[in-house]
Length: 346
Image (cartoon, rainbow, N blue to C red; front, side, top):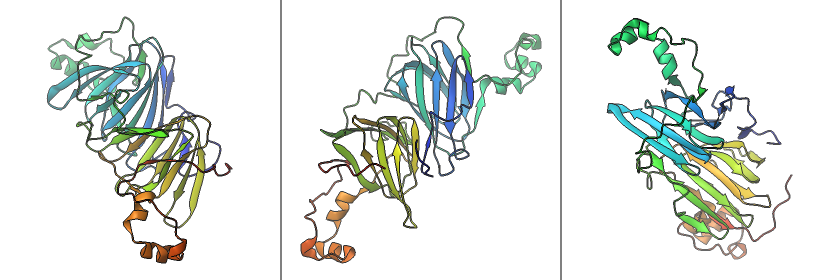
């Protein structure tokens, strides 16, 4: 990120909240990135053989995508609902609030996970800390064991990421279909054009989602995300690859135009008009999270078809004969072609 803006900051350049030889955790919450509302984001890096400790989120559902590597996820949720499954690069997993889960790198390369939580102020408990809160006698009573069975437990703070001592234990059922797993990389993109595409992880395609969703947006250097706004959802985007420019209009009439590079995170409040434009030589790859399970938008293109030319003439104070010939657009395309030259990049 090369300029100041209240709508954008860097995730990959932020100071880790945890770091060890097993991996790192970086995060942006409303405490770090003040504009965030109802959403926050984490970047979890696990080296081969590393385990993200069992934990549970107190106040938020979580939606995550494995950007690289191969991880095993195990969860235990309400009413003892247990599942364990492998998540490959490009696939996603969902963990409901209050369900205890762990993430384990079971591949030969570094695993990178981008996870969004449905709150700006995430809170969690770790398995280690929750055990440390109870005495040896209480733990012994719980498991029908003598208190001395827990004498070796380290009651220091949780390590968050630790190393596995042996080979990964992958259950034989880990490859079966799972309601918490979504194969985004295997999805035929519901929106696909020569100049871009969008894969959609929302309730329409993934029934487990309740209050969060994600689009994976790819825009070629010949395309653009049309100007639009989301009436009932905020938008938090992570730049996985490419260079982009965004403009956001605030209600006070001020404009915020900024450049985005890999590792940046931006946030657009509900109903704020904005657009995304590719200003690099390659393709853009954005992971865009929403605080609704089925996000919708209102695009500029359809808006021009919603009103008569007489109304548009009066609104723009342009004689009707001088108005552009807006194409009839009953449904916004989300991504449009970019036949015009790119405006100078400042």
